[in-house]
Length: 143
Image (cartoon, rainbow, N blue to C red; front, side, top):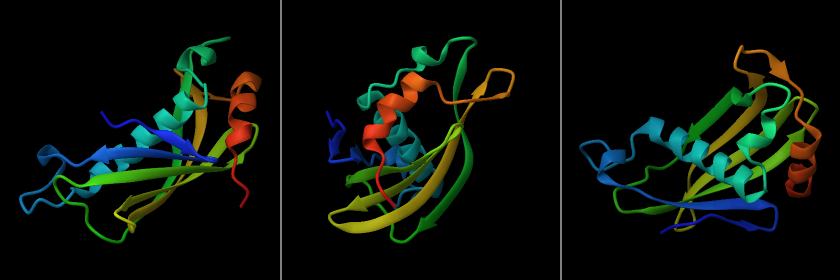
């Protein structure tokens, strides 16, 4: 099983490309890169010690994508093992900004930038809890 890990402050998540991820030509369907990036951000949080349950007070809340930019450079193909590299670059009172890059055998396939915030189940923005900030700050990369 492929498992993610930190290389310094950069989180690396290996992902195998399966038939279900590709089009008829065996090339990764473009929307699946977003799924890989989302999975890598979730694992980044988990490996940094941030759990969803720590955002349940005073009311349930979750991370939501506020802005996303993506650039497709080269295709991933069936049976490739790609690496999704996540670097958190900015953490304000309400937002986290991260760069993500998907590589395969040293080639950059896709680059992206995501800005996430925390919202309640009623779609109200919420400040990032202090205990979450404290766990994320050691993994903040300098820009």
